[in-house]
Every structure is written in C-alpha cells, then in structure tokens.
Picture 1 (tube, rainbow, N blue to C red):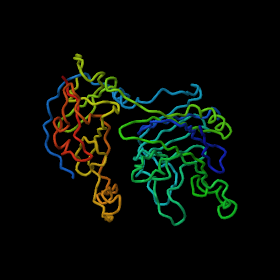
Picture 2: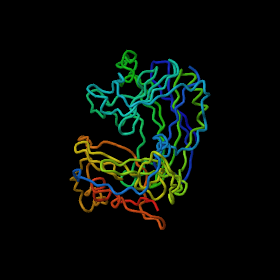
Picture 3: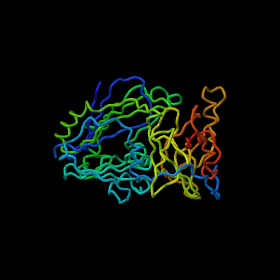
Picture 4: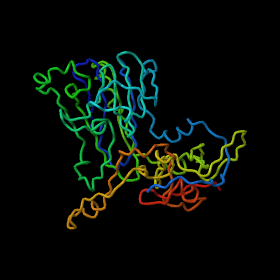
Length: 420
C-alpha cells in the first residue's frame, strides 16, 4: 500500500506537503533517515588532568574537512528523482541564530533550541526555511504560508512542551516495556480539520499568528517500522512547497519515489577515518581507503594520527562521540551521548511480584536541565569485539583517562585499529 498526504495551513493559498509511501517489507531494522527537499515546479565526571599523548603511529597528508564529512555522511542510496536544474533554486546552511519571528508559546526563547537553519531561495511562492533543534528535530518550517510547526502547548492554560512533541522527529520506542501497540501499524491522524468551532469561538483564525492553535490543521501519516538493535535503515520522503494546486500535482508524482530499505555496510569496503590525539584534543584528520594498510605518502604538510575507526556503522560496531563538559572543559571519547548528563536513581519501588519490577526498580533518571554537555563531533564507529587479525587496541590503551574515563554499562571500551 502506498499513501501520500498533504499538510496545510487554513487560510493561506500556499501549501506545503510531505509525501510518504509505505510498503510492506520484511526484516527492516534501525536508525538512519534521508529527507529529500524538492521545491514545487510551479510557483561520575572526572576533572581534566595533564595528559602526555601517546606517540602518533603514522604521519600522512591532512585532508579537507569536506572529504572527511563525505565519508561519514555519504551513506544513502542514490536519489531517484531530481528536479530540473532551472527549478532547483539555491539552499544555504547556517548556524548563526536570528529570531524567526515565530511564536510557539508566550515566554519561550528560541535560542535555547536552535542548532542550524537551511534557507531555500527560489521565488516568493517557493522560498522556505527549515530550522533544526539541538535534539535533531525540525522545529520550524516557514514559507509563504507562515510558520507551519504548531504551538508547543495543548490548550489555553495547559502545560508547555516546547519543541518536543509537536515537531518533525524520528523516535525509537522499546516495545518490550512500552507494548506492541507502539509498533504494530502506521498511524493516520486528521487533526481538527473542519472543526465546527471555526465558525464560532475560533472564527478569528484568519487574524491570528500563522501557527497559533486555532490556525493549524494537519492530516498526517506516521509510519512505524520494526527496528532491531545494531542494524540500520534508510528512509526517503519529500517536502514540496508551492501553490496548492501544483503541490498536489507534484506530490502525486513523487509517491512512487518514496521508499525505505535495509543498509548493510561491509567492513572491507567502508572508508576509515584517521583519528589524531594530542594533549588537548581528539580529532579526525583524514580518510583511509583500507583498514589493513596505510600508504606511506610523502608530503610537505603531514598530520599525525593514532588510530583508525570506520566511517560507516559496520555490523558489530558502536558510534564514538566526542563530547565536552561545559562546566569543566573536559572532553571525552565515548559511546554514551549522556556521559555528562546529570543522573539519579528513580524511586519507583514496584512490588517484587510485578513482572517488570527488576527493570523499573533499577531505573535511572536523566536531567537535561543542567545543560552540562556540548556536542563536538561523531568520530566514527569502533568494534565491540576484537577482530581475529590485524593490530587492534582498546580505547583505554590509546587514550589517557581524561579523554577516556573508566568504562561502564553505556561507556564502552571498544577496539580501534592501530597501524601495522
């Protein structure tokens, strides 16, 4: 079965749509997403310690940052649809914050959520801007129709949920503790379309802000896919912006291009990233083509590196993040994105006879309010188990304890490749 849907604002004549096709497929599993944007063709923390870095194991020419980014990010299948060149417009990405003029609730400070903005320029009917939050969510989509992401509150006098639920985001749910209902089927929702209150108490919708509670109708499809730990899927959908009639025509054409599937990365063919360590930093300095050997290339500009990691989520690997404690300045290499987040044991105290008591009575609460963590980068992917051949070392052997404090349940001591 394939489905498409339109998400529209009441009132304005310009629409945008997200096109989704859903098919029954088997053996689909975890966590990568591709979004293709198309314009309508119409219109326990430790303090930092002094660290004497291990001697670099090789020296090679330093490569452009774009080369390293491509190795990490070029993971999706080739696009099946491309707009004609004259209709593509121009897109720019910026991390400089300026207020969007959107209002999600009184008293909210947008700078707290902003991470980056993509601005697409084409013409007055097809221009738009997407804003991404620090949690990876799309919290703002503005175009000729105004702001399309709805308010961060449920009703007058209700509790705020700023940029949390009413955003575009991908969510993973553990069905063991949340029930099969979370993953059994996709969800179709028609939110307040043609609500009779628009003719009575909500009749002022035309003069209210574009994304006010009374001026936001949405018809949406929420696809739900079975995800297994350690595996990866890709998912392609389209965003179409323009006049209503042309958006509907183009959305229909794009339905067959929407797809998803399993991603399987081979260890031998995956690019590898060279990671350099010195007294103050850990960074990616280049891309290697093979894990077993390194070319001895001569160059006037050479950069030291200490070990290699995969650029792709190869089976049997975990991601390595570089994260900084904003209070102490300490940087760590870790598999745990919440390493510096405040934690406390939750006193749920379920009776022992409860079937889930062993799980919930050991539950830990995470508090993001302290804002301790600063994201630095994804370094790559490292092995959970030591391979049978080659030179491999644990992270604890190639990094000082300041960069790699003692491992625990989520902060894993993985294996990385050192040069032969």
